[in-house]
Length: 148
Image 1 (cartoon, rainbow, N blue to C red):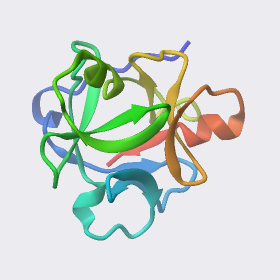
Image 2: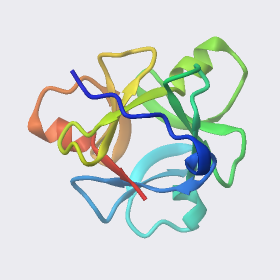
Image 3: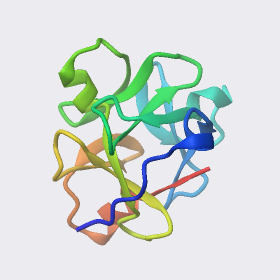
Image 4: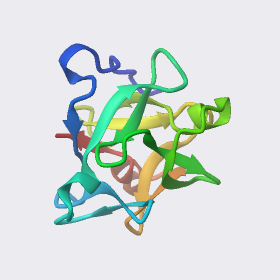
């Protein structure tokens, strides 16, 4: 069982953050043409900046709002991620909300457990962002990030 970390509050809410891959430290979560992946040297830089906000699904969760597309969030659909506008539905809120937990590969980092699929975590695979079950050391590293 993962250790649940406190949800960001105070000064960290709404701050611009980048999410750095744990096992590819030169790569950051970013959106490009509304698809979500990890890339190095992101241009424009705002494509890799998100506000980590109180989760759309409610207390104890976080959501990732795009800096350069306000009102758009990282959202999974069929376990694949896209940057999508909030449509106000409960399904969207669940798809765009995560429990922030201690990193699965390194407890000093973080991992993000899906709100509506709690057996799955945000991870990269072949540089694309996915929602997957985690069963190997590689998958744990792929599902671990540093908030910068």
